[in-house]
Image (cartoon, rainbow, N blue to C red; front, side, top):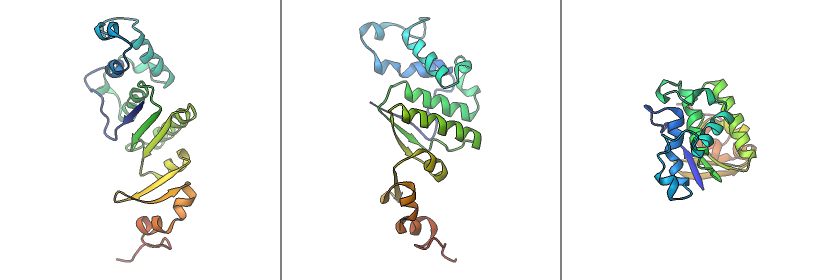
Length: 178
């Protein structure tokens, strides 16, 4: 399957972290019993345990019963990533995952996404932070106004004259004078 994480976090702010993770579990239901079980009311339900395990793996177990709106932005982004992973995707699409994060949070995210990629989940990342992309991605596609202008390794696209023209001003990498 496919899962995604939005640039603007799409969690339910008035619910707890664990409740947010459980909301999407119905899409993975195994049968009628799961549909009829009020999962939020059943302690020890397997979905709840899976969510707790996912939080523990992400280093977020201490926040399971915290309201999402009480968490700082960086933690909300991490919860949103765990929420996406609860779908057990083969492809994880991320829209500006490092946007709004401080340098320490960005490094934590980079480490987490590297582990996710190493586990066999393919990542499709839209991101403006080229340092982040350089450290995460093996293959890069560069768009300019929705049109693909380059594709390859980070080194290849950085040296591409089309990329230099679009993002630096001219093919020599020197900005145009005003």
